[in-house]
Image (cartoon, rainbow, N blue to C red; front, top):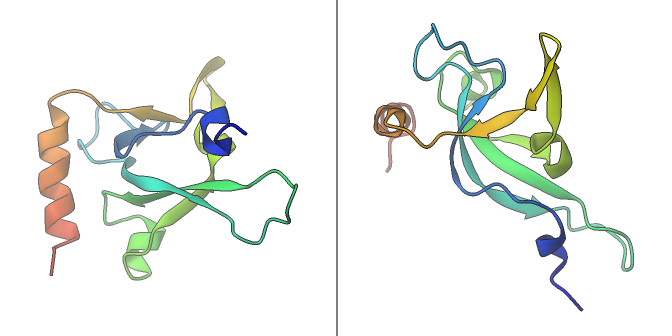
Length: 115
């Protein structure tokens, strides 16, 4: 039997921009760190598993940050899906591969200090 998780595209851990990211704004507006993917454990045998992306905001204005530095959780299909932005289709979340990663790592380490 093939690995069920290999059937869906999965986001790699790392930094992502939400489609609402404003290029004219701060480097961390609508920026997130994807920590991994989890599976809902109460799925009955034989039912399709339900996967969720676990991620956290890199801006302190985010609601989950204000509520105690909680994580965001979104269904995998929604996270990996497309949205309409000004009449054009674009990914809901886009992986960040450029030099801003260093800036985002510094911001992450400031707002989520390691104990």
